[in-house]
Amino acid sequence: MNKTSVSEAVAAPARIGWPAIAALGILALALGTLQSVVEPALPLLQSELGVDASEGALIGNALLVTGAVATPVAGKLGDRYGGKRVLVRLMAVVSVGGLMAALAPSLPVLLVGQVLQGAMVGALPLSFILVRKHLAAGESHAVIGLVVALFTGGSIVGMLFAGPIAEGLAWQWIFGLPTIVVVVATSAVARLVPHDPPVPSEHGIDWPGTALLSGTLLVFMLGLVTVTRDGGIPPLAIGALALLVAALATGWVVVERRAPSPMVDLRMLAKSAVWRACALTFVISASSGMVLLLLPQMLAAPADGYGFGASTTDIGLLLLPASIAGVLSDSVGGIAARRFGPPSLVVVTAVVTAATMTALASLHTEQWHLVLAKVLTAFAAGVGTTALLAATATAIETEDIGIATSLLVVTRVIGVALGAQVAGAILDAGDDPATGLPAESAFVTAFVVAGLVAALSLLFVRRVKVRTTNVRTTEREVQA
Image: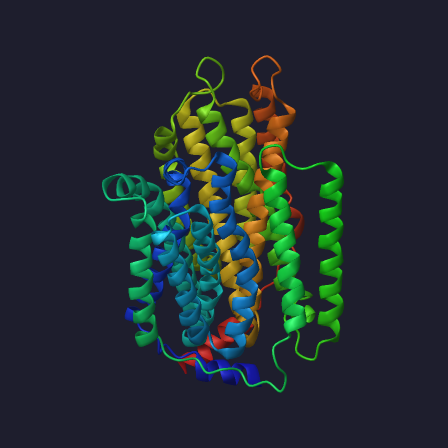
């Protein structure tokens, strides 16, 4: 038995019980709710705060940008100082942000609150650290899937109840109520989850690498938000942003290669199980991002053409089955990864998504066509990305779980954002000069492209290798 197996055998016994798992799950549910309440309540927030649409868009984008930057940093700190310790402190930041948002008298204060709340995305890799350290590898697949499912399920809760809460109480309570649950759940995590000791190291945190990685993600996400907003920015500015991102990324690689204890061990990224999981997650998420933008746009298009003239409330109800399917897929993704292996699930994801979008390109005359397509693609994407996440968490050394899974979470966010941008560009290019709305042919083109993007994952899937032999060996050692 090698040193890694010995350490896992010592740390992995099921010392974390269902009450602790429930606390982590409730925390994930509350965070998912807090993350999603802005979207349905945005028109009301704009009216109450007296801001226009472009300023209102900053409310959601601030959280997105912070989440992309904070997640890998939180994962690395969790690897070094312990997942529980960092998680509790991170939730303190999120709670302060939620309180500021709930008491915000103006847009700037609300934006600061959203920036602080964005740190919530880092809770996922920190939860994975705790699950992986305190459960056997096979059991952790299922629990990781459950945590992701509840985080996704929180988005359903937020979408459904943000409006009634804001209208029945006040808009401040859409931030206040989830924040209260976050505080209670964090207290339960602090009391119920076993302590995971810090990982000894002769070197300190690689702060230059941390700063460069954070800067790369920050500039990239800010650039993406700027490019995707109405009106965009000039091509020259886009080129300048691209060069800046490339320069920061290059500097980060140089620093990481020389650092004695790098923020991200590039040797880890060179492992097939990690970089191919990132590539597959990006491709699947990009296709999902396209679907995420396209279907609501077609549902809302005027009913006198190819659209259905659905209102915001109607669209929310029509897409609710897909949200439920996404939660179910996240919950079974980890179990399915253990049973069938990630490569098989990625193949299923690619085939189902490609076939569904190709069919939708030729058949989209009824609302149920779009609803069914959304359910199928949401379920397939959830199974694929969650399987990759759970498998990666059990395929690498325990001291790298946080940073590896956080990179996958960030990859998922970036993939969705870029997919939505591509879909929007296709629709903009296909505007009907007479109406100013996208022509039906633009949607057809976008559906086909989304299917082709999903099919790209088949180019990588044959080489996805997870150390299933080591995982099974570890499980037998733990059980022994």
